[in-house]
Length: 295
Image (cartoon, rainbow, N blue to C red; front, side, top):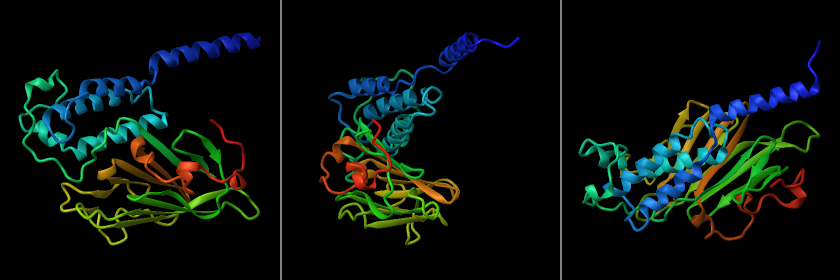
């Protein structure tokens, strides 16, 4: 005898409860609030007290990996805190006395490091990263959290600021189809007189390079302290471009014959941008939307 609808529903509810108990609840906000509380009034930058708390912050976020596996905000925060660790040279600083900064060390136990402040490091708090992504045919998530599906055939500005510009090119997925997909991404990192020259990265449906178009992998005085750099996360499938001075990460993936691009950037940087036509800021025009925005 088959199960009734009620029995199937009861089984589904029990399974969901078991899964929730096993995986836990995604709670990155508690990590952010704890880090913000610990570092209030503390000098930011490459010094031991700040790095001790930054290491605690990273450990807290990493412990959320299982519960937050499918959460796009979690992955943005994880990349952001890892970038802060690199930009502030925390692993080197914490290794100077053989400590990893996660075993109960308190900031009062260490004097401020005599290492000079990195002139190209990010000067803002960077606690509230915002995320923009373009993927699929194509779906767009803008910095304010709104989702929409757009046509945007041809070349469109995804982001344009005094530090960084990103342009995407989309083509129809099939003849007579309104839906498009991204086939080219161009990232322009603008020059910084103090930190390094401009760099351009180009990805296409045929190629996802592991270097800028000039063959280099970083901009800056040396590879150990780059102003901007590109790294290959997965050969031929995923690259990350980091711009240290604005604590920003651009992620580009190749999925089949198409590309997806995601940007993680501090909210305080976004607030300084002009309100011009940028997909990440304003979304696509109404005439280009294939469905109503979903919040």
